[in-house]
Length: 171
Image 1 (tube, rainbow, N blue to C red):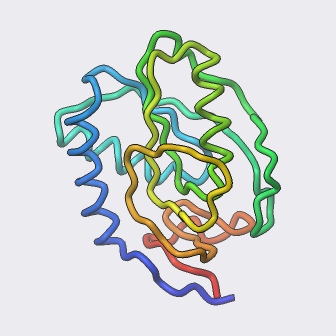
Image 2 (image 1 turned 60 degrees about the vertical axis):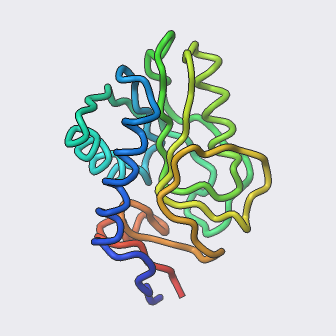
């Protein structure tokens, strides 16, 4: 399997700074980031540092959802595999690595609302508009990409490739 670079480390860093500026301008100053593990952990780490440079210091929590397992195709069934953080009454920025079918984001937004989030916005490093199966509104998007399977920058294929500092397509 070969990995073809799609988005460079430098492009990612620049875009995250832009996302942090956009988020700090649009969200209230007191919010909680809820990252969707495991793919978003690198993105969340860089995003919170960029938000700090923009003067924003959100609380950070994570939830673990699963829909892929070890395959390249979504099972279309999203399930919670951990606990929900205490977010009742909080403004929440849901952060994901990629919006593909939209099912994970829709499920996660519902969970956060059920647990009392005051308001929920969504941010994703990547989106694949061609794969959308359900309507979701992602307010902050890093990059739109074609319908290719990607790895790197925290995103895996069968728990491999998370270490890459860029986003690449598997050929």
